[in-house]
Image (cartoon, rainbow, N blue to C red):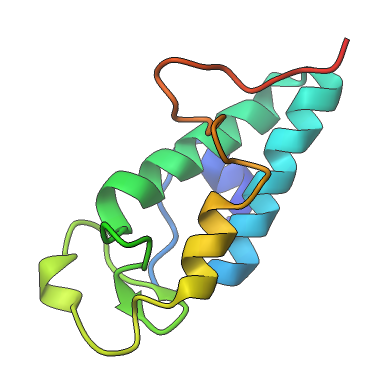
Length: 114
């Protein structure tokens, strides 16, 4: 199943996928939602955020896995190694697109253009 459809269906298919490919895709889905109001794009971004941040992210922004590859869900402590806390992953995930308005933010919905 393609990344978008899987995220809309809340199916976690990220194990072994390239982080720097999928993070910008889902940032883009959030931007599409902001411009169009089409709910599936927001749903995909929110579900993706929920699959990544609480289940695969170190406190410094690095991802659990190997290098730039998503690791298995909820095995963060077992995946600690020298190549999985890269700053490019942290920057991709917390870049200007999601900064302060993440789809998972409990206090703020993403902005929408009028």
